[in-house]
Length: 215
Ligand SMILES: Cc1cc2nc3c(=O)[nH]c(=O)nc-3n(C[C@H](O)[C@H](O)[C@H](O)COP(=O)(O)O)c2cc1C
Image (cartoon, rainbow, N blue to C red; front, side):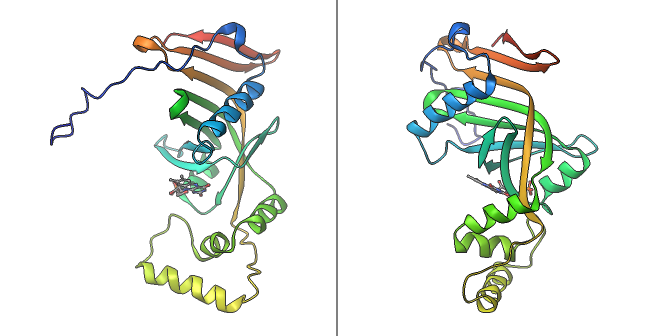
């Protein structure tokens, strides 16, 4: 790379393995579950991290990484602070895309859908499962809002520790989960010479409709 950040000569081949129509599961959730299992086997640390893309009411997009915490026929769930930028975006425009990139497998999955809040009970149940330090940070922080300095945050954590010496931090009402209910999936498999395999599933009245997309 030169000093101007020219990355055009940075390239590699994507050779992992093909994704064939015959081996694609007709249920995208099952296909996703299979790929997630393989991704966890390759690199359990990062497999569940996903880019969450939202847009505000003006259509301005915003993307950030969050961790997928559970998925099933009800949707794909993550936890956060409802007062964050993503919370504001989702309140105005409850549609989003989540994206997984699994490096070692040369795979990408995109999932679009409508987003709903999980119940307070679900938020509380997961909050109470988290390690103490994570609960303290979540309770001390109003995510995505400005703060004067780090000391202010550390002081807020210290005050909580003093107030709840038993570590029983109350679940903040504004901290909880979202669930994305899929209407579209895309499974992307990197292939040699950039002739990649892509399959898109769209939800119709009759179920999932699948088509191959050009790379
Ligand atoms: C690996 C990784 C995992 C993260 N997981 C979460 C998460 O599960 N929930 C969350 O609110 N933020 C998570 N973050 C922080 C977000 O990327 C982001 O900074 C934060 O949610 C505020 O985003 P917003 O201002 O767009 O709402 C994670 C960041 C990284 C790099």
